[in-house]
Image (cartoon, rainbow, N blue to C red; front, side, top):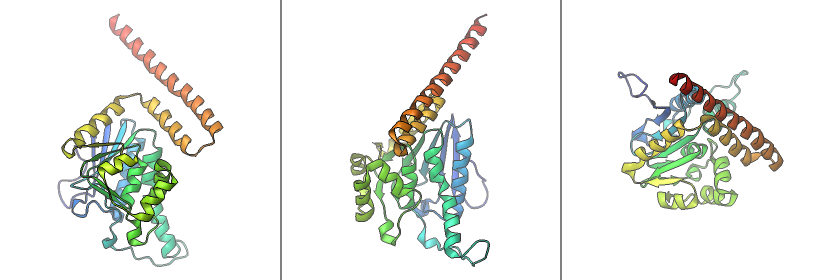
Length: 271
């Protein structure tokens, strides 16, 4: 089911919770889910809720209609900002606002549970940052991928330059951002941008099957596995080995505790 009211304008973010999977849906389909401030604020809140909800074992981010996210809505205009001693001028206020919205990408990347971008059509601009923040990216055959920052003279946000440098390597990331070429789903899959590509009609079913399997899986194992993988991106090798050793002990201890508890319950049921 979806959170939100039946009356008034449609909410810009929809949330569905089914069997341990929380799906966050960007809901401005008439604008290919281009982001405006109110939408970014609601998205940040939804992702924060998913990160702290113990009932959620996997998070799926997607877009309503025929697109994932076209980036920021540049036609929406900026927010007027009057300089004040407390908030600074336009640049300081814009930075503070945007940096708060970009917590969405940090949480998708760092929350201790798997995250999946279900790319159901075009993704561009800030959208590629959101997709890159997720652990997995499943795309439909109609999906495309475009940096688009060069088209508006922008440098990149929502972690886009960081994530794609990590995922693809510096050279391939520079090609994406400087050349600004639009990629189809098959080309994006070949480059390692998309994890899997499915027929459009099968995308949701296949994505949810994977998400359900992850939500039903060893949650402490995923937690420490993701911590290891994130450490591998940034840490020194010796630090990564320390991290792996500790998380191996923690994850196997958690798994053993769960097994013993289940065994005791089974024995109690038989007696």
